[in-house]
Amino acid sequence: MKNYVKNGHRVTHTATATILSGQAVAHGKLVGVATTDCAVGDEVELVTVGVFTLPVKSAITIVAGDKVYLTADSEISNVATSNVECGFAENGGTDYVNVVLR
Image 1 (cartoon, rainbow, N blue to C red):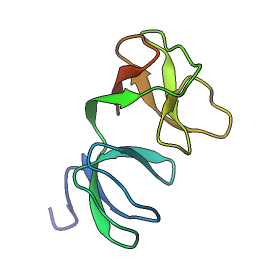
Image 2: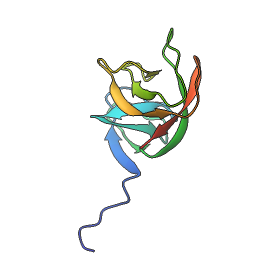
Image 3: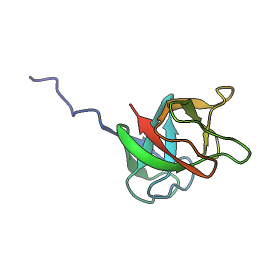
Image 4: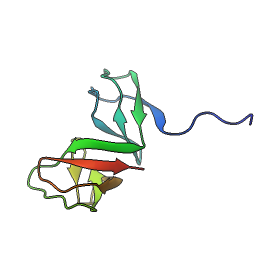
């Protein structure tokens, strides 16, 4: 197939802020997890499919199965307003949860 580019489990993102390996990042309305550290202006590969342990926003309690969202601070919330939809919580918690990205 001549028009095939890649499987879509990763996208290339140009950093607008410093990014750390393992950090969740919004690429427009798509959320992925950075494969490496990078500086502003650098490109980084974001993994967009899988299950990742990510930090929960302070004062938020996530319940297993919740639809979850990425905040501007790269934290997980169950509040949709001003956040980017990123998947579902595999488990519940208040500090870290496993998030299923799809």
